[in-house]
Image (cartoon, rainbow, N blue to C red):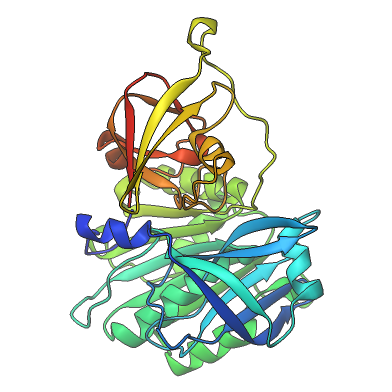
Length: 369
């Protein structure tokens, strides 16, 4: 969902779920930390538009197999001429290790159009306080939003609580130092380290209730009506922050998060259908001006079945979190293995995720885009 003072208009949803592809040339590769890089792509002649907080899906042949992974944009459409994403190595991560080991300046990568709903609209008339909690590479969409907020909303401020393993793993550290100087009084960055050096003056350890109290004493209090809370990072960190904010009576509608997807494609699939319902069902998919009817077995998702039949539907994480595969069920019932990626209002409106969706009735019709 969109956060901030403006809600996303329904007609904008088509833009988010579009499946147009682009081939982007790598303009620069920046070594942010020893295990994180930023990839800067040249804007093509037909400029790609995007919103701060959205992500790009990179499509790369790895070990003779097409691999897709979603990476948040760290560039700002208001500040940066080019597009950039940041990639941090993950243990046994297929794409996250392939990119820093193999990618070179001048290479071309196939990407999907920018997607994602961890976004907001910016206006010079806005006066608000964004309180951000980020962990590790979860800082990436926050950087995009921060740059846009500071340049587009002169009366708004941002407080960033950024958790990392140690001082050498802080992505964008020098950039944040410079931004705090340039926008003194409007950007307040607080670093929290798991393993702090002996001379560390800041906070260290895991974010807990007592630490949150200290943090709230250090950041400006603009009141709930003007404050929005954002979070992005490891799932454990976000659940902890959610619980702490709830203890401080922060309403859920003021808290927004971007689930940190590591691209787990081979996770066990749930099979909770009663034995009497374990049957193949036809699903009608309307996409890009065409209508496809596919027979979906009980042990496969709608997306898997469509891809097996050569139907090129939009998708990215295949974990039910990034929402790149989102469609609207016009009829029938669809069971989702994972509902985290959709808001309650989206589920109520009939939106489903084909990558984790299974038809439960014989009359399922899904419209994508």
